[in-house]
Length: 283
Image 1 (cartoon, helix red, strand yellow):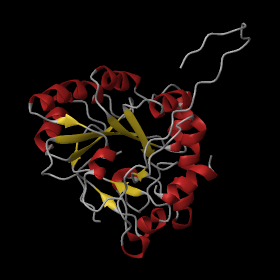
Image 2 (cartoon, helix red, strand yellow):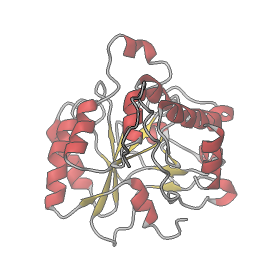
Image 3 (tube, one colour):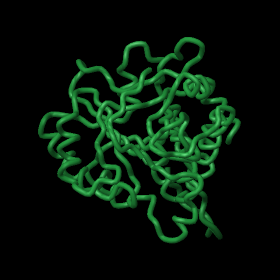
C-alpha cells in the first residue's frame, strides 16, 4: 500500500510468448443437455508499450502527454500479499465489489493492477474484470512483496525470484480466467531500482507508475482524498488508488465525487493503454 508521495526514477513479442507458455445466436434443432462455456473474448490489437531502456531495463511510464487533451487514467491496485490467506479466511475483505459496480455505473474505464494472490482469492471477480471491455487487467506481482528494501514495511522478493514472481502472477491471472492480461507491471509500493527494472525488463513489460497519489490507502476521510486527487490531476495524469475494502475503505465514495467533478472540468477517462499509445516512441 502507498502511504505517501515518493519520487522514483526512471508485451510485445515477449508478452505474447509468456501468455502462450502460461497458458450470433442460432436456433437449436434438439434440446441440449448442458450449457456451453462462455466464449473467450477475441484478443485486441497488441497493446502499446514503451521501448526498453539501456541494458534491457524495463521502461517506466508515469503519465501521458500533457498537450493532447484532458485525459486521465484512474488505476486501482488489487493488493493482497502471499501470506494474507488466513486473514481472508477470517473475513477480511481484500476486494471491493461496490467500487467496481460504481465504476461500471458511471461508465469509467479503468486499469486494475492485480496481484496473483488476489486473483487466486477472487477468481470470479478477476474473470469478470478481465472479460469486461471497460477494464484492463495488468500485473502487480504475485506476492505483493517489495522489489527493493525499505518499501513501506513490505516483505521483499529476492533478486533471483523477481522475474518468476511476475511470471507467477501472469499464470494466476490466466488461471482465474483473465484472457488477455496487459503487458504492464506495477511494482508493489511503487518501489524499484535498477536491479528490479532489469529483472522485469526481461519480460518485455512497461513499468507503470503514476503522477497523482490519491492517498486513499488507510484513509478514513473521503473528502480529503477527493481534494488530493482533484488538486493533482493534470492532462495525461495517472491516478493511483486501491480496490481493497479493508485497507482503502473510502475509495468508492471518492470515485463518486471525483468522476463527476473531473467530467465537469472537461476531463475524459481512459485506460493506461490509451495514454501509453499517445506517448511518443511507443511501439
